[in-house]
Amino acid sequence: MSKTLYDRINESLNYIKKSTDITPKIGIILGTGWKCSTEILDSPLTFNYKDIPHFSSPSIEGHEGKLIIGKYDDSNIICLKGRLHAYEGFSMEEVVHPIRTICSLGISILIVTNAAGGINPEFSQGDYMLICDHINFMVENPLKGSYDSRIGPRFVDMSEPYNRELISIADNSLRHLNTRPNDPRQNDFARPVPVRTGRGLVAGRVIVKKGIYAGVNGPSYETPSEVKMLRLLGADAVGMSTIPEVIVARQMGVQVCGISCITNMAAGIKEEKISHDKVLTLMKTNEKKNSTILKEIIHAFSSHPGIR
Image (cartoon, rainbow, N blue to C red; front, side, top):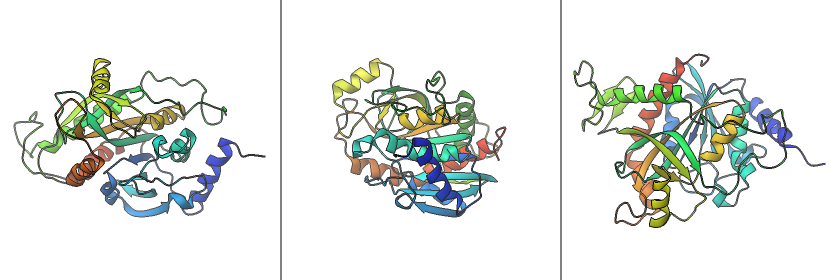
């Protein structure tokens, strides 16, 4: 008799629980190029995806395939260092299994990060975007198929996929990155100077905007006409991930905060070729910023009601 989805989740949970009794409260999914950010965790305990029952291993450069549990700022954190994509040949169930697992471990907040192409002409390469909503252009929904009420409701309310309060907290926190102590220019959020905060040094500007993320299947990048269509429909950035993860997190009652790093402008916005190598290069350049941004967000969320 084949195992149910609920059984598979529990087998993954039991494997992790054999090594730790920590109950994480904040989960993080590290997208392309966000790998350096696991350095923020104290006394990390690392699991390879390939060793966890029912986890698959990613094949894309920039996604290591490790689950890490640790602590930062008195909060227990669980981190997925690398994600799975449907374009790699994984089923949607395989793509979201790691997220179902960490949600089942007890997190109440999930931070999803990604690298995305900028569609909004007011965006620039190297900007960051707090995700306020998304448009799903992927073929499959991760909730399709057999249903088990122990995991969550069949029909999931998506009127607020990204928690407005968390967006506000993250936005307010990140605005301090470009403000020196006692600097009267408190609203100058794009000052091109190195800024030291209590959680690290940011080299150069950190520009954080808000917008709508469009999710597509990939792995080919979008054509100029497709980008034009997405912009007409209201999208500010586009990528090949994130949305399935957010859907299952919301099904399981977890609040979500999403942030994209705009690694390139999408096709037709600028006259330049797009490649994965260029994406990785930009994210390598932004490693310190990525790490500091996550530290700021975690620090802000650590004082959020119910998070410890």
